[in-house]
Picture 1 (cartoon, helix red, strand yellow):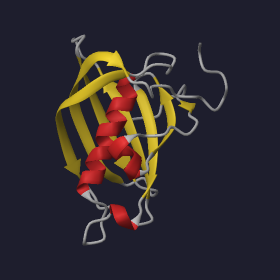
Picture 2 (cartoon, rainbow, N blue to C red):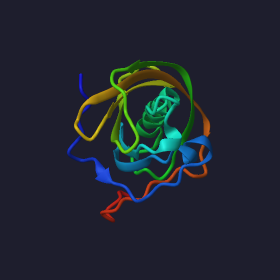
Picture 3 (cartoon, rainbow, N blue to C red):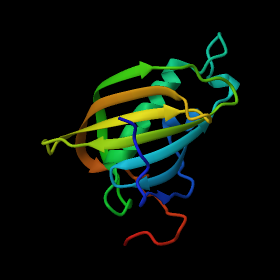
Picture 4 (cartoon, rainbow, N blue to C red):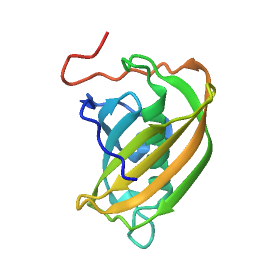
Length: 158
């Protein structure tokens, strides 16, 4: 089932990723509890020797979107710590240098208080499906010090 952008997803100011995610260069476009939309313009240094976007980059994007969709609180002013327990990826079509990708992540219902599930999809600028992912994640104790999203519409719930 294709992930749909909820009508109440709100535009987000630039978020500075840290660590490995900071090297990839993806950006958060919109967020709401249980959903995130990100984007990435594919660059040559992200491609493999065949000139295709490296599968590890796709997996990173899928994993990152899962976490963003599921770890912020309702007002996006705190982000819970989490780790990936299991993740399944399906590569559908190749992406290349210059492609602009949309990465969609969505929370999926779980009965557990300590784990969560998420699904993710990546599309290119032609709306062709590039990759999908589904994972299970564990919440950890504590929050991230960089866990704040700022909304562009200046109407963040406080």
